[in-house]
Length: 150
Image (cartoon, rainbow, N blue to C red; front, side, top):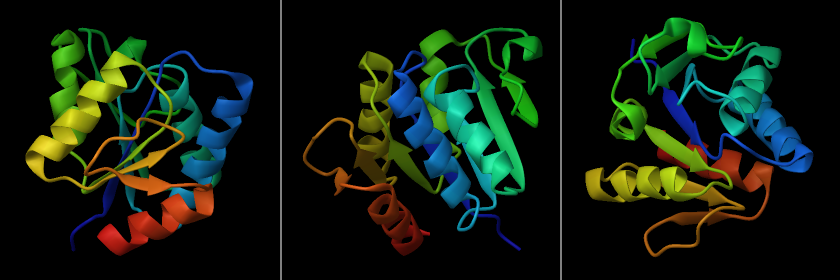
């Protein structure tokens, strides 16, 4: 049976408020997705994984930019060290059936661009407003959009 994989992308540095939103999003994603894939590091990536685990999510995958599994945040079940640096963003996106973007900078923007390039649905929640990206104004709306795309 196919597992539904949702990606969460966003900054490795974020405010406490955004971190809490990412945790809440992760927790609610655990009810609609089997697997959460992220860049595996800190900030939004870690907060979403913590929430996913708190919501009894099945599995978290971290696609790491460096060479060491130990770089992964503590909520990652499977750490994939790539040694690719930011080029690993392609793998984060290609591993997902749908992606939710939270606030971030150029790395997040590149992941959104890859989603658009590869035809992977991407939902923006408090993130970049770009043609072709599905806008969500709340966590509940983001979850509903994810449900529609899985």
